[in-house]
Length: 222
Image (cartoon, rainbow, N blue to C red; front, side, top):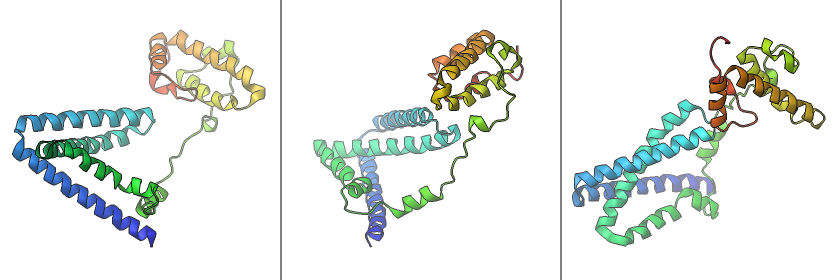
């Protein structure tokens, strides 16, 4: 029963907020000239879209997914800001009370306070979402790793894959010291061959398990 109430609550809340946003936008169109409205919308949309893209890419989400979601967040932020502007002009500082009321009654806050059960629809979406298949570096077929003095025989793509595969060895304490030396040799070899690309990779703030392949994707070795 509580879950059913949670679903209905979420739908009612979204409908109410949508109606409030529509009234706020209408107030802005009536009480504010078009110039400030347009500037407010564009500024809010640009900032929200930029933040969504930066956050998504920093979390290593698929770029296609990030850029599909960014316009939605931009439009939502633009409309919300224009609606807030309309209410602000009409009601003054009392608009803050309205914003607090909207935020305080939102489904996540209501669920956190225990008023409703987390929306089952959200749970179903999470369960139905296909799992990302991550190919571990150890699953990639590679020639047997060569000593550091023979790394010149590996192509750029093989060096990058070997770098990724070697990360799993860092989880084994007995191989830690040797793995550090081998990974350092990989870095030295990549820097020797491709100094500019290596510098760009380092400037991107790579992680120990990151894939540098996109920086060294030449199609052929120099």
